[in-house]
Length: 156
Image (cartoon, rainbow, N blue to C red; front, side, top):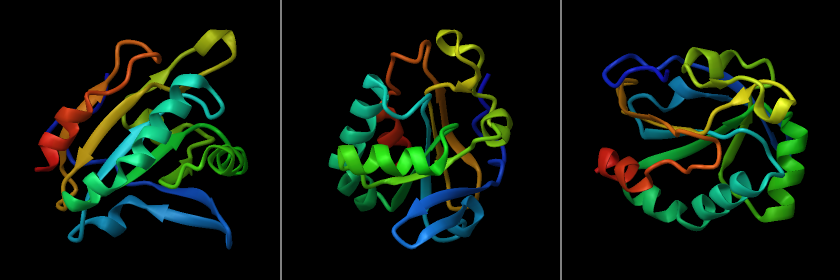
């Protein structure tokens, strides 16, 4: 069960692969500056995840106009995420939760996906500038997408 609306968002520092190498992405660096949409997705190189992140890349401007940054988290390595992003022209910030600590902290661990192991469930959180969760959703199945209209409404 995902963490509750109104609770303090668990902070994280996760790795992102950029052209300059590995970079630390820390959620609390945004506090006081921007709202943050945190998206959890199961695995890179899968159909639904690719469609979701390509659609998010195409719609990134709408989130920026609402004063928000989008961070997407999966249990893939940052190197796999980079290859996937490059192949699919995904430009939003992807971060690796390889050890699944952040996924567990947010309460969105999906056990035994397709018999291959535990992954992040598909989930969306809106974190206010104050670090408080304003919206939280875990989809019923990994094939379902979050309610992005509700995510944008929470940002407005």
